[in-house]
Image (cartoon, rainbow, N blue to C red):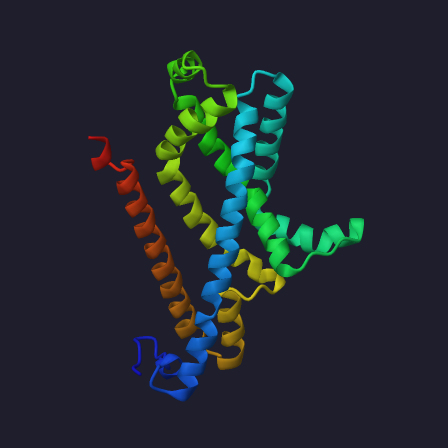
Amino acid sequence: MGGSGSGYTFAWYILSPSDARGQANLSFLLQGFWATVSISTLAMLISLVIGLAVALMGIAKRRWLFLASRVYVEFFRSIPLLVMILWVYYGLPALTGVQFGVFVTGLICLAISDSAFTSEIFRAGLQSIKVGQSEAARSLGLKPFQTMRLVILPQVVRAVLPALGNQYVYVLKMSSLVSVIGFQELTRRANELTLSEFRPLEIYTFLVLEYLALILLVSWGVRVMERRMGTGVHGRN
């Protein structure tokens, strides 16, 4: 413990692993890691599937598919995630009678909101592939689906991997908003512990460190994948 210039006395013992009370508090806070990672990862996987489908619609020759993709992207990209979470959790039951749990609500909102951004990432990647790639695949007898799966998509994934990694980091951070409806992730647990310990500075400082460690770990993992796929700065030389 020590005092600051403002006279504040820190009480780091509430998070000390050598103290029984600190051990209990640390265990309570760290249990939020699994909730944060699980909802963020599942939401990212779902958003990748939806985003790719919307991106393919966005480059389709049929105008109604193109317009549908633009409406989807602009609509969900314009709605703040917090507003969407509150509407789905509180507004949807009043309108339709359908009530989702906090996990499902958060998962749906994170996935749909993020898919509007991932679709634009995929669309940019698809448009970066030269037309000659498709023409060469057709000359080899590949059907359109085979061309997309075997020729185009592998190159697209390789090109957009860094952007998708950044998007996953964004989802991890935005998952903290699901705490407003009671989901027990990192931020919610920090809020609840603050109410019982009355030590917001220490607890929220630890929360910052938790997110920092998590984001740095994910960023490291993405860089490893980039190097293996040759998408990094050195891999393109």
